Image (cartoon, rainbow over all chains, first blue to last red; front, top):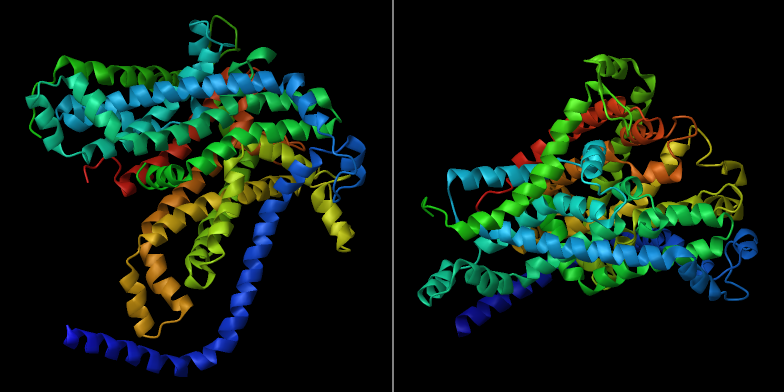
Length: 300
Length: 294
């Protein structure tokens, strides 16, 4: 005990003793450059933050004030911009987005975790082929599938229904979801399932009572990523949906803009309303998002 | 795990995924290639076989070249800002010197990522607005009003204005990926370098860069693939205009298909987009070893 203490102390002292000499010179330039870098960081933060701040502040302004007083705060806070936006159509876009997003999440998590279960527990040449088939899906992108999907959905009479969005969103989210959940399932100790089998648990029981409850963190990650995708998706939402009453927020906002022409305060209010749910979700589930982003991109 | 006969339930478990991917991902891919050899309009019951005619048209189409050059500009500028700048930014944020302020800055830089691209694009129509736009008003404020131009209405600036918005939105996202990678670097590497008296710049090049090389490479691929596919930003901000000055391959594909109803030609453009993006996606799968049992 004593010996190591002395050694540790010695090392400490040695390090502190050698430091001041080299640091004295560095301090002046180091200190200056530190503040220069800090200034840069803060300027960049301002550059990012200001347009968002402007959006929120201007959403309370009248058109005249947005046009003539770009920088100032509103002289009168037009809270009614929000109620106007809500009643002029945002409520319906909002409702559709919530519905499409929830349905997509439920289906992606359910179907994806089921596939991941099989892919992580069994091995055969068919399973390997299925795995390649599913992973290969991440190479596909919505742009390339747009016209064929329009045809397929027309054959089934699904164009201009919410199903057109839900089904295609599910398909495009499945590969990444399965990759993430499967990787997690592989880390679950085999002893758990063996003891469950001895206790007479069925395959379905192992999936529903062991694998799913243990995987809540990764499922939350896929929930965040899927919600983010479904809430913001623009291309399919624009092409597959025609009816005003079925539009989701991203495509609805474009209509909203055309309909409002110069009622910018109301348009900006609509934009703020559209942003709120994802900001809340991502702030609450930030931890799971960061995990998904890093694993999803590096591993997927 | 040894090969054994797979019971019924696991087989049933995987079927829905296979169906979804088969019907909505792989079939469209094949169908798109098939469509490339035909000429048809969106609601026509028959398709007219034209062979390679549309591919020939593609090779002679000057607008395609213009769009592709814009995609390349998008890629080059995005790689610079979202990979090199974001890596430097992440390194600075992870530096002990800024430990107190870094968490707040991380959240701020990440904010635009949380907001839908359609909201961001609409917001930037206000930023770039020639009469009351934030950018021109700011230039006026600091006495540089001669630099103020109608950013989106000018054929030389439009594409750069669109690209600038993308950087504004995405830097925080890539920075976050780099921060996660930097946090995984073993601390003793830096401690050893400290003992050797290495400065920050040397530590950056000798430790940080080699240690996050894989993330860097993946981020380059994500950024380049994103640039090949980019649709929402130019479509919402400029519609590809003025003229074709800010168009991209995806915007052209949409315009040909759903604007001009040349579904066959649009399919050929989609095939081109697929080939370009699949090359990079394949490299990404190869490099990151997705699906390995590690």
